[in-house]
Amino acid sequence: MSSKNAAFDVSLEALTPEGIEFLLTPAGLPVRTLAYAIDKMIQWLILIIIFLIFVFLRNAIGIWLVLILNFCVDWFYHVICELTFHGQSPGKRLTGIRVVRNNGTPVDPASSFLRNLLRFADTFFFFFPIALVSITASRGFRRLGDWAGGTLVVYSSRAVNFQQNSLNLLLAKCEPANPLRPLSNDEKQAVLSFARRYPLLGEARANEIAGVYAPYLRDNVNGPSDAAFLLGIARKISGEPQPEAVK
Image 1 (cartoon, rainbow, N blue to C red):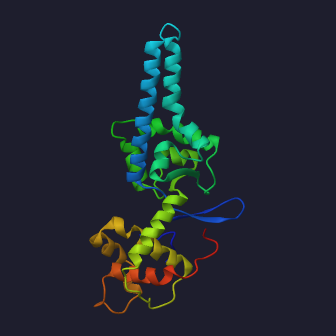
Image 2: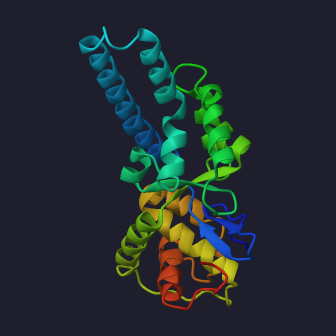
């Protein structure tokens, strides 16, 4: 089983032009929605400040300047933030995510402009149904702007480190388990990815997903549940050296 097509694998492998392979963890709909809401409130705050300045200085500045500033805040807020703060707007920074190109390299002006230009298409109707469907249905949780700009929204290294610490605490409570056969490096990565997702799945859903693969690695059906068995394997392999190609 390859981690690239495993049912419970949400990680993506990216190869930079220099030949360096990265394991990226795309950010899903809930955290991206929270980041967008934070950024939207900041945009509203900026617009309110612009309006108040116009009210007090309306004899010194024209309404045209206010309209231009309003246009810039609405259309270029995300572009300026992503290019200035290494792919992070304030909302993304607070939620531990960032924008990168598909190969894991920093977002460039063209990619940032395209992904944000298509934001109007993702939010064409109320409640953003186009963005909702695109993010939910696509691998890597891409909206239309991400497809056009060749970008991904991924967890930053700080968030990944926090997830790793949480994973270690989870696995410490599990009994180590041995699979029937040696696992390939891709299979080990897939099992670890399942363990990282386990707290978000719930026990019933976790067992449903684990049931696709666990029976091929165990011979004792009367033992722990399929999810617990995969978590046990994850604990055993989590201390093993990981492939050097995956950074």
